Amino acid sequence: MATITKKELIDRIADATEGRRVQVKKVVQRFLDEIIGELGRGNRLEFRDFGVFETKIRAARKAQNPKTLEPVDVPEKRTVKFKVGRLMKQRLSALTGAAIEDEAGDVAEMNEQGGADEDAEESRGGGH
Image (cartoon, rainbow, N blue to C red):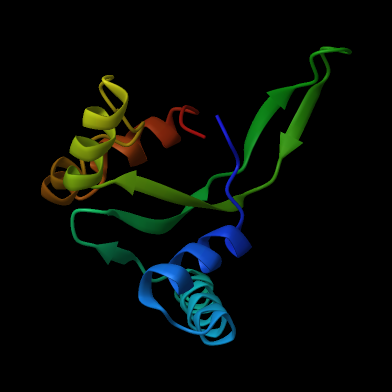
């Protein structure tokens, strides 16, 4: 499995669109900055069939230091979740020959349930 950098993606997009790399870089960076800004404001970003980005608050909890076995307070924190969309799931499955699962379940299921299952799991101390 290879790691593809932002620069490599910019080069590919510039080549495919015959655009100037400098302009493509500005557009890609602006797109990423907008995603960060929206998530920072607590907004949910939905890219139909691709996936959904959203932030979740993980409640403060008690944990245990694995070396000392002492109880440890873990503070509340905000995390970013990505839920794979239907079309991405299908395409990745076709490319890899393996079923693609995300831990949050299908985006359609999440929308129907309003994220209730994931919230319940986090309140039980599960999730990420």
